[in-house]
Length: 244
Image (tube, rainbow, N blue to C red; front, side, top):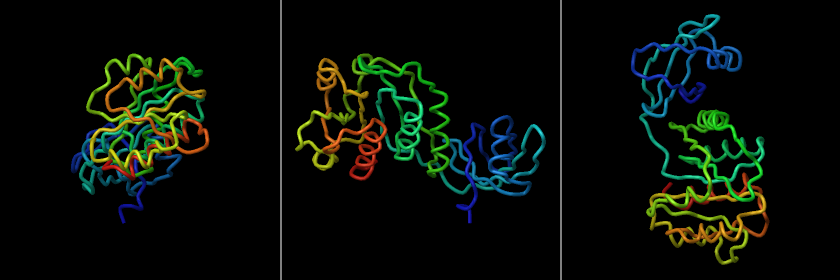
């Protein structure tokens, strides 16, 4: 029964018998997009306190009042999976954010490289895409987007206990992602995938990435994939073949 109700992320604290008030964009979304009426129900989550059933008590012109009726799921956080990516065009970047959220990414790291063509990405917009994907995919948490940084700055502070899967179109065929993951899947609890810009990393950037501890070059097949496609393919394999 509960699964039939639509889901909504909120920053409000969710506690039994509490009332919360939604305004602005969420008021518009519930009233005009979801078209939910008085006395109907929503499933609410905030990434910290599980999922709750909330009853629409009152829909006014500028606000909606909800009553938190009961808890329906305890909090479960996503595995420790990161995605490092070079920014791409807006529409494809939105797709990358959405699909990677659905596939379990916990943190996103936009990186500037020598061949990155897209500048000044909108982190707030990407976060909204991640929220929407979390609502749709039944996640109980929402991934975080870090501020954009240069590749060198990420590498200089990279943790030694995290595996990095480097999607490298120059990798040999015997380094396919499935074979690699089957060999190392029991060695790590913390994972990350790094995707380069169109045109790939420069030789010097590639050397810096390969200098890191616990980095594995992998290939995703015979074809050259767009960044958003490569991210989805790699993340799916990590999700299926490891404990993430």
